[in-house]
Image (cartoon, rainbow, N blue to C red; front, side):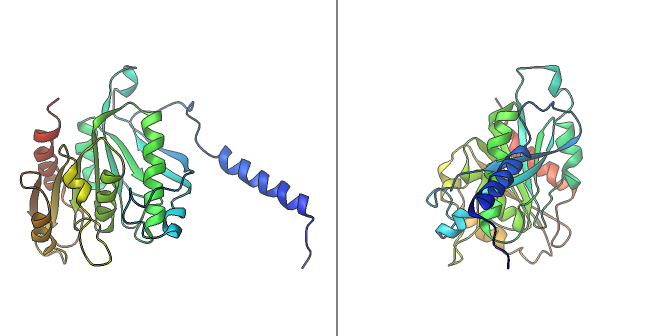
Length: 260
């Protein structure tokens, strides 16, 4: 094996670091309405494990650092005002590369900014948390999002991930769990302490009547605050909720969270 001189190794390492940073989407990039725009961002810190309980070790927390991506959707009319603020929906898919799917018509018609996580998918918690933190901290600087009007949703493992998101950053008012309950610890206990502490946060659970996780509806109801949890069942198995079911869930949330 040929060994490169030390200064050569350092030089190439610095170049690679510069290239990585250069790929981050600049804040000056023009925004586009009604189009999915890929945004590259970075999370450079190690999150505190006490703030995010799914990170069970220092190694887990370290893996939250890195370069990540999200797809950004801006609603029609966003560019017409320089002051108006908008509600925002964060989406995670268990297979990664999240999209609006059956939720698209509702989110577009109601004027939502939509953040679709790219790398977050079923697997280690570090990259899931890192993708969310990087995207969240980037988008609140890049886009006019109304604090207190942030929502998160996901299906199956994405639902569990979204339950962590609403507890990791302030300003969330709605959690839409689809096909699964919240994240849980190694003893099977749901991690809902911060869901309970945030009195302005409401949770809807959308579940197919033949879904393998259907028994989680009762379990979630037992560990959440009465009046701040609502379940809606639909005909079907383990799948994203139909459009009309999602709309019903959002209507319930909106009555309680979008009065301002």
